[in-house]
Length: 279
Ligand code: NDP
Image (cartoon, rainbow, N blue to C red; front, side):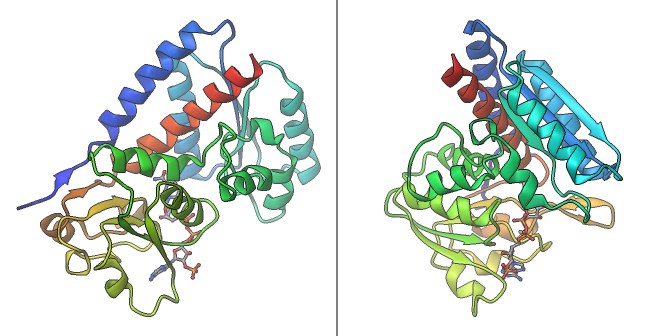
């Protein structure tokens, strides 16, 4: 038996359709401002997808493209301006930033109420405490939508998250914990990754290592969500060796077409939530 392939594009489209309908009911358009510094090809693609999603669902959007040489002070001034702009409900500064700009300083400068990426410590702290601020971390929230799409009841399930970054791994583990999973958070020093994964009903792979997780490492029937986006010989590939994992897993996301579209849909959801709260 091979695994069911979770169609991230289709699930994201369903969410976007609902957001479009919800936005049409509001008296003001939800507004998202995206700031892109430099010309990193991957960042440009992500920003373009966010702009396109806003257009498709009827959100107001602004993209501020700044040169690689922009100073930290100039970037902070733009963030401050966007914080005060009443048309803008979400402010997002695309990461990574050039080395001369302190990323932490920029994240702290974003108004927490407009921090639709959910990177500000006030929002990550709220998540840690299990409080609902209306803003959820986009990629982890997208992973959760994909898991829920399988119909699996999460309560009591064993989940393993591979990767402990502030953007993906840690918040994904917290969301699973809030859904009553028993969570193991793995990282590069985990002594026996296969032994941890073999116990897991749910695996979220977010290590940024192509093909790290093979079918032999998985529990038969597991739900496998592959966040990894790695370029190998010009091809986009995940952290999971799809060919072998599809033989063992019960459900699996492809790369591309799995988590990526959900990340953008969750960003739009956050922007709508902020707009609703303002109204
Ligand atoms: P980071 O590089 O910040 O974190 C990677 C994590 O993986 C670290 O915690 C690291 O452990 C762990 N790790 C590295 N190697 C191993 C290993 N061999 N075994 C177990 N754990 C390991 O990456 P991000 O969290 O930012 O991103 C992870 C991946 O997800 C990337 O491929 C990224 O491109 C992708 N991504 C995709 C998104 C999407 O929308 N599809 C959105 C965001 C990210 P340690 O802490 O010990 O170093």
